[in-house]
Image (tube, rainbow, N blue to C red; front, side, top):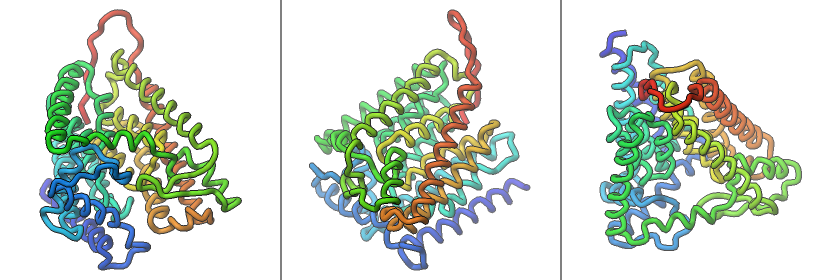
Length: 400
């Protein structure tokens, strides 16, 4: 297909799906439980209106964001109120992400356009909620980092993403080892500078960390699955809204939190050790990052529906230069995204009450996410560089 025709196809598909997502989110067309799609944007608007007048969300348990998120909320409110400004910013970030992926795809020698087509179709998979949550912004910065031309840009984009939401910092695990020093230095300089500016504007800008520490086990997380299955049988598991999410209130949840947290640290620590020893030199940066993010998701106490934006964005980069595991991972994540859309918002009440449709959708969602993580991990472990004595020259692979 001619390049111009391909660009036209991508942008048309993007425009159609985003128009549908916006109309559904603002409830101009019918969507099951559509009133919940952009519900968080009302909260963003409230924060934004206060932030631009110097009133910060001190001691607000709903505030669970690093400081740069405040700039996005404030800017969205300044552009337009009643949710319009934030959604407009989200659409802009979404379109920039499409352009970045499309540019990388067109420059690639690969004729497979799966990556850019996947992003064009993203709202169909994960639902209009992708434009009604904050996660498209850190996803854009992570994709920019993965496709960056050099280590300085990689580190800077990763740092900005981390100041928006913590998980983009995991991209550092995948940074090419030969460029690791410059990447980390660029990350540190940008992060320290951003933190300093944030604290000048908002002295308690990192207070969200204490809130993160206090969070319990969200009902949609992998760790909550035993209680969700128990609730399907007995219908008497206690759930309560805390820190902006429904959490399990039951015995032994603290132990589960400890187990999944330690599991995540162990798995991510293994990736870091492999990277430091140069054993990941033959694996693409995007695949390592995808693996790290998948591990962080399945071992997190929170697994909100919009988190699928993260892995779909990174997966689009992986599809530019695919490996043997990319196709099964893509299929599993697409199914998981569709199941996530069924859980929230379509069948959330069913899920909470323990009835069949909601529980079945959650089982499919979690099962596919776990399977995708296993496939990604197996690809990494099977392609490790052999252990060698002394210093060795590492073979670099394309960033994508």
